[in-house]
Image (tube, rainbow, N blue to C red; front, side, top):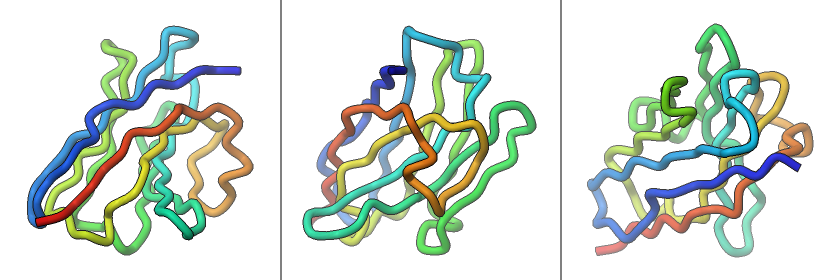
Amino acid sequence: QLQLVESGGGLVQPGGSLRLSCTTQEFTLDVYAIGWFRQAPGKEREGVSCISSSTGVTNYVDSVKGRFTISRDNAKNTVYLQMNSLQPDDTAVYYCAAAGWCHLTAPGGYHYWGQGTQVTVSS
């Protein structure tokens, strides 16, 4: 399986910012759509954002629109999730995943996942 690696999580106060990174040494990420998902204890895994493999088309779940931005740097083989104006409800383990197309409604369609990075938003 494609092994993705997330980084950038941590503890931040409400209103703060974090930038998550997703990369791999297995493949060039530009051949995949990359999605960011999150899961809090007792909750379903939720699609947050995704970016297409070639066109750069992006999708966001309504709750993060205007606050989060997904981007990719092909030279660094890295996909980022810039998270601003963080709130306690954003607390979760964040995962990146690879798929053939950009979508948020079917996590099962993403076959390659990272181990996740913890984001905690608390005063």
